Structure formats: structure tokens, C-alpha cells
Image (cartoon, rainbow, N blue to C red; front, top):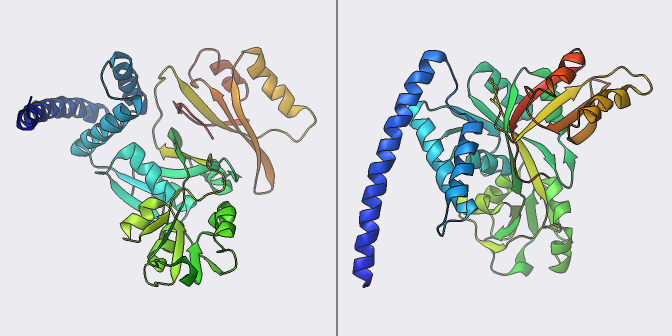
Amino acid sequence: MTLDELRQNIDKIDDTLLELYNQRMDLVHKVGELKNTTGAPIYRPEREQAILNRLKAKNKGRLTNVAIDALFLEMFAVSRNLELPEGVAYLGPEASFTHQAAESKFGAMSAYLPIGSIQGVFREVTKGTAKFGVVPIENSSSGIVSDTISSLDEYDLKIIAEVVIDVHLSFATLSEDIKKIDKIYSKDIAFGQCRLFMEDLGLNEIEHIPVESTAKAAKLAMKDENAAAICPSVAAKINNLPIRFENIEDDTSNRTRFLVISNFENLPSGDDKTSLLVKLDNTPGSLVSFLNDFEKSKINLTKIKSHIVEGKSIFFIEFLGHKDDEKIKPILEKHADEIKVLGSYVREADDV
């Protein structure tokens, strides 16, 4: 088959795909009309996950599971935005890792609103300025994000999804001669994450200037030929700042987990995780007694983190399962005065 014949066949398939996409959007529109009569949310993470699982199980072609996720998650996002464009607030600025996490869930078409603080994200979702919020909850190297725990305690919102992304940093600069660089912009924590790289290139002796975000670092470095930025590659690309080195972090397995928050709850998917905030009496054995109920019911606890909110100890606890599972409901009812259920949601395949 000639190149022209191959291209003609591709064009025919594209025409068919366009027709099928429009047919799917017509059906999505009808679903949206039904949901509008009941007030049900347009975004149902558990339904989307079920579709992805079914397609991956049926797949016998060249598409990988990652490719299926990429193609269909974007299509889901397009469908939602055609029906009801809903804002997504995230811990800004633009091109931050949180922005990257938000786009991985809501696609390129969504209306994004960068917010300057984690509490601000919760506040805007509570007010209805945005339907969804995306905030970091933990990093594999630096641990739990305290502001997110405090906001989960303060606001009456639910976790509806989680996102885990690899944290990779790039070294970007206008300078073609590393020796001429006299300053580096980045977030304070990023300097520590790239210590070995800077030592190897002799960059540890020049001026390191901390800024609010790695995204801002790229903007500042773009204004000075003798400056550089340590930032995500997306931040460098958005600002047209040339990337000289990629994946410069000391720990190449560094990952960050993000939470998606909103004002509704998910139905069970069959592969869920539930997050709780637990406030126990400050008495010996209170935590052990509480956890024993989970052990007796053979519930798999995946995380127990203590945290201080307004001088009081609380525990951030997660387990596998949905809050409405039959073996879980009795425990939640027994400890109703001590537990705040933060949400049940589809479990990501990998955690930090």
C-alpha cells in the first residue's frame, strides 16, 4: 500500500471517528438533561473509571493502558464541558504541579482558576465560584501538607478523586554558557531537591533566589540572560524558556498526591479508598481501641498520620473501601462523634 493510500484510509477513519464522537456527545447531552432534572452532578469519577476498566479489558490493539487513559479522559472532559462548563480552582499559579494534576483530571477545555492559597481553593469551591478544587495532600519526600488537612477539617467539602503525579524538575535558561549564569530562581524546597545536580555543575556557589513558585521562577529567568530557573518543564515551555537539563531532581522517584474536592459524594465503584479525620480523647489506648475495630472487620488501613489543628491532635486515616460498604458502616456509626468522613473515591493505582 502506498503512502497516499495509507493517508486516505486514515482520513476515512478520522471521518468515522468524527461521526461517532458526535453521536456520543448527543447521548451525553441526553444524560445531562436527565441529570438536570434530579440535580445529579455531571462529573462521576466512579462511572468514568468503570468505562476505562471495561475498555482496557477489551483492548486487543496497539493502544496501551496509558494511551487509553489519555484519549478517553480528555473525551470525558470535553463531554462535561459541552454539557455544563464548570470551573476548577487549583493552588496556583499557572504551570504549577497542581495545575498539571488538575488538567490530568479535567482536560484542556475546562475553565481553570489559579488561587494563591489552599484555604482559598476550599473557600471558592464552598462559595460556588468553582465546582471543583485541586490541592496537594502529600509528597513522597516532604510528607503531609498541613494546610490541606486544616482546610479539610474547617470546610464541609468532600474528596471526590485523587491524582498522583511524578515530580520532575528542569533547569532552564536563556544562557548557552552555564558559566555565565549568576543567579537561579526557584521555590525554596526545589533547591534542596536538586542539590546534587547543582554541585556537579558548580551551581551551588552562585545566588539562589527563592520565589513563591517554580512557575514564577521561569518568568523571572526569561527576563535575564544570566539567570536560570529550576521549574517543571511545562512552566519553561509556557514561557518559551529553553530547557538545558531535564529530570535534575536528586530523588527521581519523588511523587506528589493531590485531592479533588467538591460538594457531592461518589457512589461505590468497587475499588475505592476512604479518607477520615479522627479526633480522639487524649487518653491512653484511645487510638489502639479505635483501630482495633478496623482490624476485627478486616479493613485494610493504608495511612495513619497524626496532625495538630489549633493545638489539638487529630488523625488523618485512610482505608480501602467505600464508606457505604456493609462491613464499614457499623464502625463509622459507632464512632460518629469522633469521625469526619472526608470522602470515598476511586483509588489510584499508585500512591506516594
